[in-house]
Length: 326
Ligand SMILES: NC(=O)c1ccc[n+]([C@@H]2O[C@H](COP(=O)([O-])OP(=O)(O)OC[C@H]3O[C@@H](n4cnc5c(N)ncnc54)[C@H](O)[C@@H]3O)[C@@H](O)[C@H]2O)c1
Image (cartoon, rainbow, N blue to C red; front, side, top):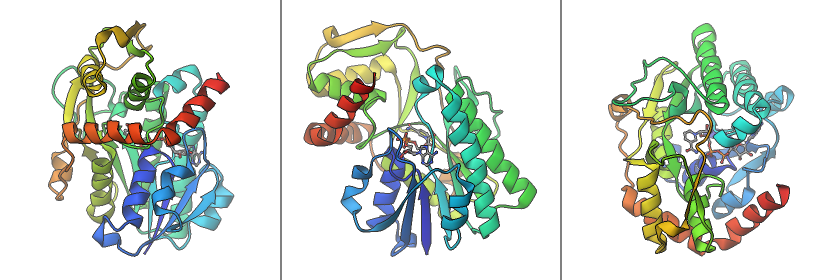
């Protein structure tokens, strides 16, 4: 069994690679893993240190059709995590998002079709549905993305779907809520707040703090992806819902408590443009395939905070590089 993980040096992709290589998924035991990653600012081979030597690495771009034609053949499963993933960056500059999240998906789907790959998973997000005030989306909800990031992800999903319908490519799509866990680039809210608080800095809270997100540990997200890789129906979409629905105010309170800090450390900043108010997924369809999350939010958050406390060596250089680039 050979598994190609595109974007496998990022936050969630590296969790998946660490899990596959370390044998967390019995069906894929002994699989040979290839990681293809462009190593953008968010890609980091150090995320794969725990399984160093357990995979082949290809440094490259998912938009490079020629490279994909060399790399993809021979793989039994392709899981695509590669993306530009930060909404704020997509508001500042959207071009790279369309390139990687749409054009890159097309290049991957075409290469998988040409190579006859029997199983493809496109990793996507709840953000493609827009914002929902109450209730939860099921997989038949219409796509109504509201940020350049989510619009580009929706475009990639539509391309994947088109390859399934038109060409019969055996691709399934997963859509998940907000992830937290170790190795998350410290621009996203959980590691940004945790590392700022550890450094005695303030944390920026958008708007009224009432935006609601449904949090899931990256390890549970990867468990869901694995169920789809093993048992998902080609052409189908599967939701991987979070385990803790929290307003940003509630999340901030938990992080302040975990770090022993008070609200004097919170700086109110103007709201993100077009900020989606709430996301919520119904994951009944995936649970019917046997999926169940395993990480309770309280435990996962405590473990994550401890990881950032232990791994300054990992995040300090990333924050310094990001500050120098500003
Ligand atoms: N982070 C979340 O909360 C979340 C939630 C739901 C879905 N997702 C989806 O999960 C996937 C992974 O998200 P993440 O948070 O790990 O992102 P990330 O930004 O941490 O990692 C993205 C990875 O893709 C690589 N990459 C970017 N452009 C590339 C290109 N053109 N060619 C090859 N590699 C490229 C980067 O180098 C990096 O390693 C994304 O598709 C994202 O849309 C993320």
